[in-house]
Image (cartoon, rainbow, N blue to C red; front, side, top):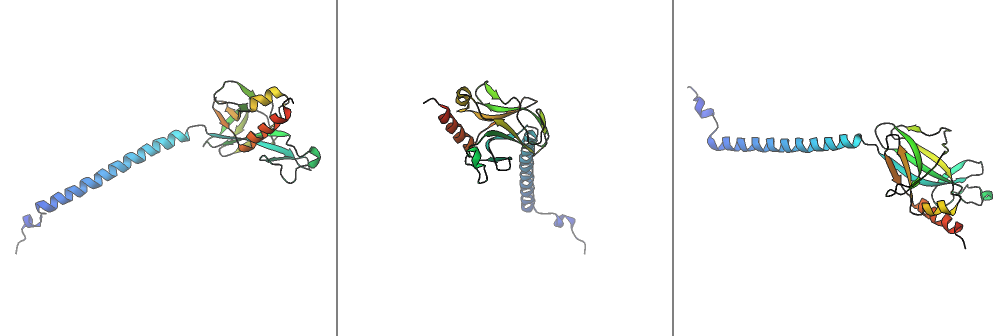
Length: 192
């Protein structure tokens, strides 16, 4: 008995069904590839951007003379002989980029204004100086003195902390502790 090779071919209905499945799989694969390509492009663009997180903080001196960085309230081991009042402002900068950046300046200002109050020589815990290199996912804390005059105090009311890189990227940030602290010191320094 000879098999008829024509009988082994799929009939017309099953051929249409197979073609429909092939088209569906091809369409799903093409759409998935397009979406993944777009997401990859966005990820690559974000990876090449300088990203910094800037947070102003408050520092107190503890009994051992070391600076304690905290929020708006004094930490428990702050030195009561110093009046338990904060004595330093701290600008913390975290490099969220995937590459090292060089921080050239920190200070306070408004994002919508070209006028900024730059900290001339911030103290770094490592003893370094500006400009300073900041590796990926690394942080630095720059300590600066409190404003001494009412003029600087008024400039801080709506201000945010900023950090500028050598390539000119500026990042701003604020915190509830900084806002409360500025409101408190401006109230103390205002003429009665």
